[in-house]
Each structure stands twice: as structure tokens, then as C-alpha cells.
Image 1 (tube, rainbow, N blue to C red):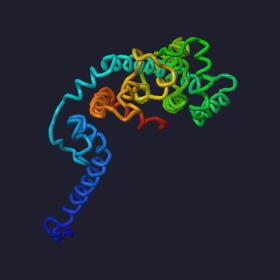
Image 2 (image 1 turned 120 degrees about the vertical axis):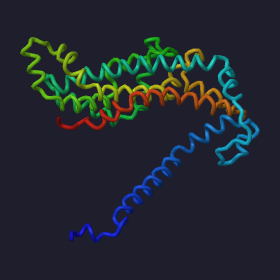
Image 3 (image 1 turned 180 degrees about the vertical axis):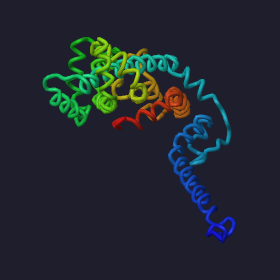
Image 4 (image 1 turned 135 degrees about the vertical axis):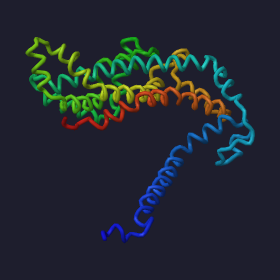
Length: 291
């Protein structure tokens, strides 16, 4: 008889399932720890103002009310929906500029041959180690002399000049994995470098373009420091500056309204990530790999 016939029923088959169950329980516990602040904020947005901090760490409100959402939406001088439109406009335009400008620069570094390509690529990577605060004052002085302060231009226009080295490096690694035989075949058919970029490289680079778009949109949507420096008119406020308006230095902060609007501010990011999650994972998984 074979060795398999001497095995007791159930032995050797239950252990992997038990280990998998324990692993899933551990992962769910870790996920709950990471999600707990968001869940507490959601619960706090549905608590009465008098019961906000009395509930302690509990996630179950003693009384459920949605008045904080209506009060937060209409509680400031400007309708909070106006802030959503401002952030959506800035994030969309910045994302479009970031993706196309970074792809232009990445295509040049990955596919074209020009004098000093290695030097300029190393210099571009060096900017990743340069803190944002180092260039803040020179940029502010420049935009002030150009008359761009208290407008959206400092938040949008630089994105069209490939200022984010991270996305350039990400796309360069992806473009290098595309076979060069496709470029040579396109050249034989009479395609110029521009047509090769538009007809060959971009259609094959949808995952990395989506990855750059997702990160760019999320980072621009969540940016607080940039709008704080350049925007002072409340009609031009973004969502992050609108949330800051609920905090009063005198101690009379509207925490319920702040939590309610914070919950709503997460919805666009969640939906954007949900729709492009597959492309994001594919772009990260294939970047830098040989095909």
C-alpha cells in the first residue's frame, strides 16, 4: 500500500487551513488598527457636539445625528461645495499636466540620444533629495513678481514643466522595459520620434500612466501647504484650507463639522483609487521589470 493510505483522515489537511485562518485574523486585526482613526472620525461626525469627546474610544454613538454635515456644508462664508469644485479643478489640471510632462521627459531619457543625457538624468534624480522648503522662498518670490500669488497658477502651471522627478524616474524605468524593436519597426514605417511616442509608447504605458495619475491626483487633492502659501482669498480655497477654517485658535473649534467634512473629503480619493486600482497595481508591479 502507498504511504497515502496510512494517513489518518484530516491529518495534514487541517493545519494549512488553520494557519490561513490565523493569518487572516492577524491581518484583519492590523487593518482594524489602521482604520480605527477613520472609523472614529466617522463616528464622531454623527455624534452630538456635547457627546463628541465623552464617548472616549467607542465607535458607537450614543445618539446618531447628521446635523454636522449640513452645518459644515453651509457653516462657512463660502459653501463647502465651492471648495470641492476648486480642489477638483486644481487636482484635475495638475494631474493632466504632471502625467504628460513627466512622460515627455521620461521618453527623452529612456529612448532618445542627446548630449549629456546621463548628466541631466543624474541631476534630475538629485532633485529628489532636495527638500521642498529649500526652494519655497525662491519660488514664492518668483511667483510674487509674476503676479501669480493669490491665484491657482503656482499650483497648476509648474506641473506642465515636469517638476516631479519621482514620476519621471517611474516612467523611465517602465519605458526601458518596452522592446526597442517596436521603435525600430516604427522608424522603418516612417514614424518620427513624436509619432513613436504617441502611437507606440503611450498605448503600451497605460499602467504606469495610471499610477502616476492616481498618485498625482491624491497628492494634489491632499496638499495643504501649497494652497496655504499662495492662496488667501476664501473663494479660491481648496478642501484642505476649508477644513482648516473650522479650527479656531481661540478654542471654539467646530469639531463635528470638521469631522463631517473630512469624511466627505475622503470620498473623491476613495472613488478615484477604486476605479483605477487594477491599473495602479499593474503599474507598480511591472515598473522596472524586463519584458
